[in-house]
Image (tube, rainbow, N blue to C red):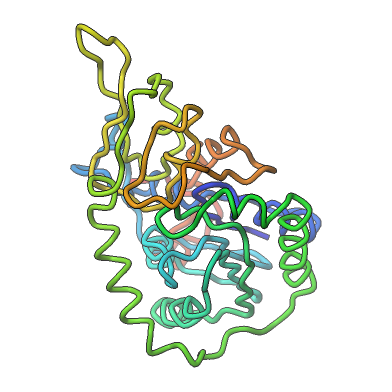
Length: 308
């Protein structure tokens, strides 16, 4: 089994881990790292956030006895990095599943997933939503979210979804009655994501320049800039390529990154993952080991091709 995940504050990573455990094992692959290694992040001019050249690969072939994606729902649709990922790969598997996590309302995402699957000529065997704490501070008071979702409740919800996958359950793939909302949701998502960071985030003086926000940002959208003569501490600077995951404001140990319109100063990180656990999704995942569709069709060898 291969499970590809995208996460902002850990819910989807925790769920992906539980799915692999319930299935008796599997490979966890970060979608953020996958896109970065294939050259599909928001970085400009073909460079990574650390200035290193990155490759560019399309039609990457994903094969296994089961292949799944786990991600949070943004504005009742599929987040931009997950859309990029699905449009960059080809899946060959008898069992393909998606488990989107959502805090408020996630049903129209089923229609968006079906639409993307049709584009890539595959079919989801299972789409099963999993309700988790929401981290979107402009809409939710995260203090209330933390109280509403104790650790036991988070684990129980994840385990129920994981059991469906382990049992190879089939379902949830039909059109929903809310399909007419999908075009509006996608437009709203695109509009808000285009300059979300520069419009919404503000760094307060409490920032110590630790850089955890930059390390946690899956888009590589934050760089630490040097201080002034009066204050030597570096500060996070946002680069205008935000994926709206809100990892930065939620992981800050000083709670120094404010978000315009936030309901409270409370913040949330999945308690089973923690802030340090989020850094794993930026670690290299050896994407070069995956074949391209063209190589698979024309080359009889099983040797992997390098990113190029």
